[in-house]
Length: 336
Image 1 (cartoon, rainbow, N blue to C red):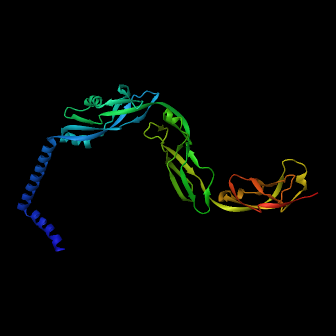
Image 2: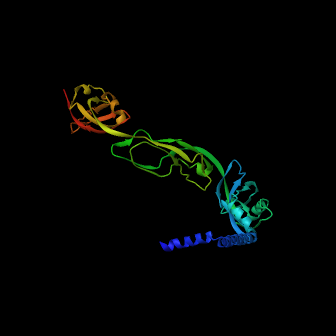
Image 3: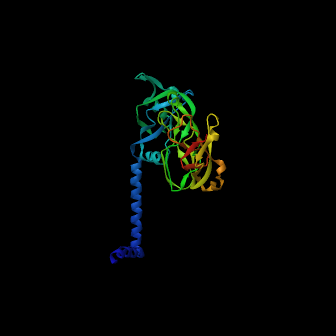
């Protein structure tokens, strides 16, 4: 504890002594001046630095689109004073270099037409943007190649890529919503014509117990190949409700393809069934037997070996899910 207090106490003693305090002030002033002049000399000398600038192709004809671009950024080697380099790197934002597509040259590689711009052309454009105190010594890359393709657009549906699970007693309630449910895509014709849908990012929802509402990102299937989407995000709604079981007793109907009197002579044992369905708690009071129809199909003329008919429930509200039908089959007897 004493060793920690001793240096602080010594500084206090120096500060309280007028003569020693004056020497301390002189020392600090000299130190500051030395550092300032050293920095000034360093920043006044010539130096080189590499800076990056974004590269954008402009003035592309309306019926064409950039299918591929060899480089989206260029590196410039600048020679100037240290002070100017410091200002360029930390005090100025990176200016985008715009290149007019109409000034590009043309060449063929592997039977494919490519447009290109050389370092000399880029140097000519940049020379007018540099002030007198800075000089451009090198540009990388020496050539930028661009593949222009005929453009096309169309509207395609949006599909959800998601893995969804729910907590016990909770289920999806209704349809999953994506808004917008379709997007316009724009890009090279050979890509757009074969595109059938745009999928969302891969999502995982586990043990859901409440409705999900969020923005999801769309996946561009041809990113970097000139394909663009009308929007990058869509709104996702996964409706979730708590469900419970409800049991109903229904009378059985007999349906025959040809009314030959068989429906009147057929007797079913039993003639009523119990239907168990899942329903959201909010809809529990809406479930009534009148909303359901249970039936069997009358047997063909050549009687089957088994005297059982399958019970079918194909008419029921869209807000329920049939779980069980008891019994699933019933016996029948044809009365003479």
